[in-house]
Amino acid sequence: MIPKKTPGPRRSAATEQALRVRGLRLTRPRRIILDVVRSTDVHPSASFVYRRVRRRLPSVSLATVYRNLRTLAAEGLLMERADASGLRFDGKTDPHDHFTCLRCGRIYDVPVSPNGGVRTRVAATTGFEVLNHRIEFYGRCGACRRRCGRTPTAGQRRRYGRQEP
Amino acid sequence: MIPKKTPGPRRSAATEQALRVRGLRLTRPRRIILDVVRSTDVHPSASFVYRRVRRRLPSVSLATVYRNLRTLAAEGLLMERADASGLRFDGKTDPHDHFTCLRCGRIYDVPVSPNGGVRTRVAATTGFEVLNHRIEFYGRCGACRRRCGRTPTAGQRRRYGRQEP
DNA sequence: ATAGATGCAAACTCTTTGCAGGTCG
DNA sequence: CGACCTGCAAAGAGTTTGCATCTAT
Image 1 (cartoon, helix red, strand yellow):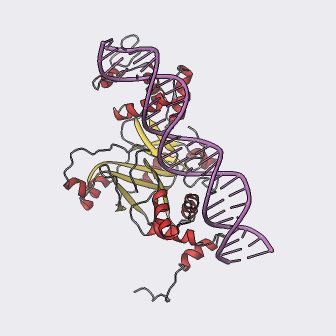
Image 2 (cartoon, rainbow over the protein chains, first blue to last red):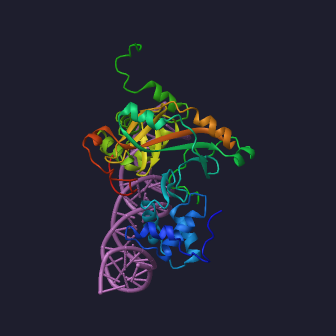
Image 3 (cartoon, each protein chain N blue to C red):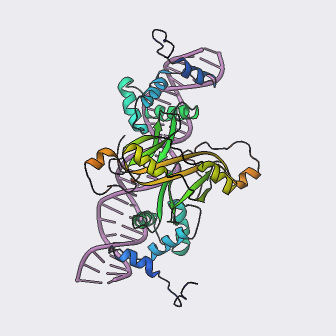
């Protein structure tokens, strides 16, 4: 059980704290942007976030969304990742891998699988300092397999060829 | 030993063949573009390739470079990859992983390390069909370590913030 | 009061496309 | 000759920035 929250902690104390330490404020746009990213698992693009935020704060600007996504990522409150389709954001900040369906384009989280210490091994063979790594899987997701499409439509999505989120 | 080549096979028969099968031609711009990508290990951007090609064929256009990089990638004659800095191309088409130095931005090839069958495991746990995967390492390369810089300058390069190639 | 945020619009970079003409086979 | 390619210029998409104004603290 989580300690019963006070009635309406509408502004996450933890988040606010994390920001304040660096002299950053938890403004309304910022809070909503973070909330939008955290409330979805579609690994949204900036423009997806923008559209969602606007539903709650119609006056927000795209520039603010970009600026905040970057700030929040820098503070570790969300993750920024780039793929063939541009920038994507991820509210899940704990380690996990990704599976991208080449047919429908959806990105799924997959639990980080035991990888036999690839990181250590690379560090050992190259002499480089490995701080981080990332594993991406590509293929056909369950839904698309059942739909029995034979050919994965997009080898690697062209960068400017629409596929929301 | 490789069977001694005929005097001057200036136009790779194998490549020409691979293209011809699909009704594609090995034109001069195309040949030079492929050659440029294959002759470097910097995982060049389109614009890097463009500049290099222009040294040998000053009249070439950027559009032609883009078109050909895509075509050649589609034919499997080179690899196309997207990262935080945009599109990158790689003349090495055999399986290998990448290490990106967060300090100098250089991308190194690293031999594909035994990964304990991550692919199979993901397929097993998700029920998805895994056709491909990619492992990216991030950290500090040997040179930058020696230079003893303390902080990895760029967490994840902004997309539009120059750093050739 | 004041450093930090915002909105707006313009600037920028990278990438793609339409088209008239050139080239390979 | 016909299909494929090319260069040029212009269009498109995503992302960043300058600036005056506003707002959390």
